[in-house]
Length: 299
Length: 300
Image (cartoon, rainbow over the protein chains, first blue to last red):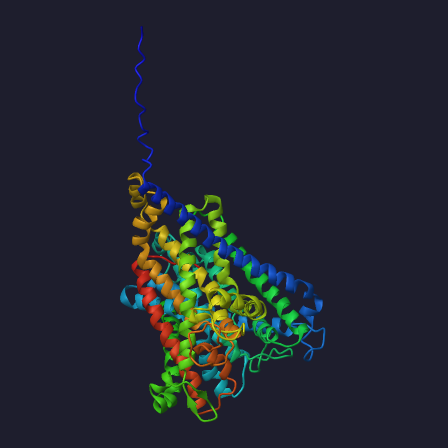
């Protein structure tokens, strides 16, 4: 005779007991995962919808004339946005002329010379500058340049855009200059190089790619600005390369045509938007790729 | 020494520009500040014909659209940040973060174009009738369907401030010490409990900073809002269907006609108000974000 001793089933100690309390915990866990997934999906869907819509509405109206001709008088078919593209290039160039040196040297100051509370104050001021709505700089250039000159001008637009570039260039330059190892600076100084020679010949070249990234980022950002140009560059239906005169810009033209009653102009607004969006997205991709942002892991 | 002096000179120019902007706005607003005083904030009319200027409807429109934007963008933005850091499969993490940041790269005039030509007509024919049928008992969804108006402006702002909230929240959440997460997991916590009891308390201050930064952006956004808000001051009512003004859209709409004198000064004072409001929000936001340590990559 043998008796089989049956062990009572032992509960898996790693399995949480199936109580109502634990069921609630599991449910709230699933709920939050689903919510956060939906939130992310919302952002992705909105972006894709926007891009595809502009692509579908704008692509049929992309043609050679868009890049070579100027707008036709109201409502007539044909014409293009060549003067707006030219104006945008001039305005971004002008803005770079002011914005890049001021931003870069502010970045150099913050990373190389800035110590103590003054540097903290400058950094704070630059960060706050970054958050001020861009139309404020348009107002500034309007009062400062347009009103005394009694004429809207490309120059005023360039100044307004230049101010917007300063904080972006300054903060990205500061960040990448800080990443240059201290040993490089010390080695250069130990060889007898002066401070300025060290910064110009050793530190800046070492951080070159990052600095260029910041500059391109700033240029892409101001290329899409509209509000500060309303009361400065103003817009111009003809070719103009005289910076003391009103000048067109692609975003300004999109704004004017979007609210136009003529379908031909609305179509060109879509086409212009497509050009602008593709340019800006390509720059964003290029920057990501250049800085290795696609490989870096989040955590 | 020469180089150091040159650098300092350029930094001084930058500081002078910032102070110059403030000074020019204040000095050019003096006529209306002296003439109207605080009633500039409470006057309903912005009336160049009778030389009476007030921005009460614009302040109302600015606050309503910004509040609407935050009510929806904060949960969605923080939820996205939580997903990207905690739940997202590793290979999708960077592409998805990049896509969210791209939303910030789209120029505001394109949001405006989309809002004006697509969103507003849709709201007028489908969205607003639907809202009124099912939620019409609420004071927010009553009145005529214009399409353009506070609702459209608020919806566009949700999308525009979303990437800002997401990227700041994501960076802050990433700084939560791994030891704290692991400690909770070792105690048998669910993923949500880790977020609830370790991540959110740790990153609360930084996320608040990001939200205030987003508030500043919403308060000052000009182009997209100007294109969809209707730019007609209607009587202040709780209905989101009504058209309105924001402080920035007053500037964008009125600067062209502004004749020297009170009118000119009134436009500048609207700008001064935008400047002061966004200055305050940005100072608070930056102080909160600085307290979290070095947060802030390219996007912020």
